[in-house]
Image 1 (cartoon, rainbow, N blue to C red):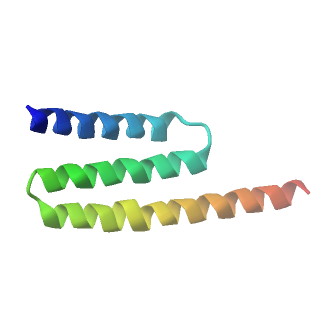
Image 2 (image 1 turned 180 degrees about the horizontal axis):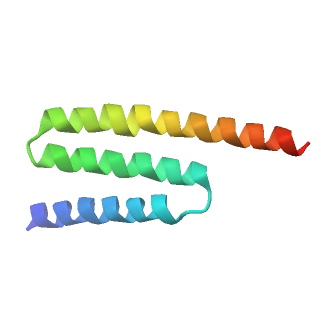
Amino acid sequence: MIDFIFHFTMIAAMIIFGLIAIEHKNLIYSAISLAVMSVFLGIIYFILNAPYVAVFQLVIYAGAVTVLFLAAISLVTKAKGEEED
């Protein structure tokens, strides 16, 4: 029963952070919530006994892709702010 509650909590948290990533107006918060959703997905992969997939999920999506998104957002907002001056 405890396993079922833990699994359901992980899946619910992943869905909630995925919805926040889609619906939030601030792009920085959306990228951060995407990273948190990717971390929960990696935990779910560990629960499903797929450790290599979980590690790739954490390294590539929660790490590299999120950093790439944050860098692109900061560069675009900085360039947008310079044009308005």
